[in-house]
Length: 241
Image 1 (spheres, rainbow, N blue to C red):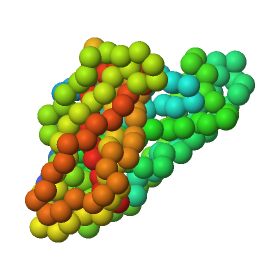
Image 2: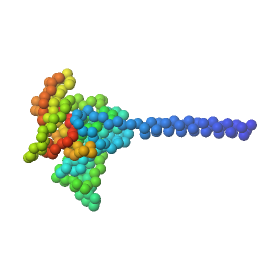
Image 3: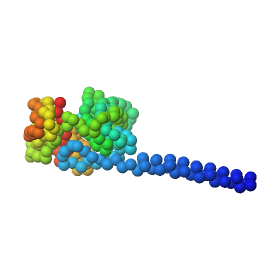
Image 4: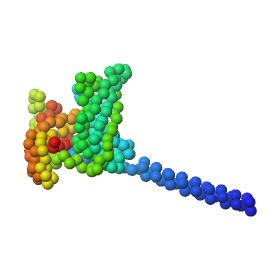
């Protein structure tokens, strides 16, 4: 009787352990299997090649090679809720361990990222510069947002490229900017263009004020932005002030 009771208690204990282990494993599997599908509220004809963002994190999923003192980056929200106030700190280290420089983003477009959404930014190392053979590391910080929509983001229409030209402007990109809201927005309107190569990797980012005036509710305007390099494919975002 004593042996049978002991065995019964051991079986019951094993059952409890198995139940707890199954529950824990199930929760871990659910997190690991959570697919973060890239999506964008930007317009354009580029299909960016993105690295996977770790589930539950906001991180840099693509970056360009250094272009002068600037590095273009794409940041994706891998968390389950919207985020804003996204800041990216970057450190560039030479292979020989020297010339360690740093930079921080000023603006992300769009400024608010829904779960799975990504935005465009540029890191400017300015006078310190960044060597072409530098190793880049990124640290991303953000805060929880009440909404997944950037209230200042405007709608961008189809892109039209000019023929290549000579001089400071290699190509001009023309598109429409529309205000779909029921309220007028204030100017100036700033357009951000990220150009990509044939592999879908970022090449550079250009931001410029394309319209000084605001835009009335339901109104649209045709704008152009001059690019210093040819831009085979691009993503574009336009924001009001």
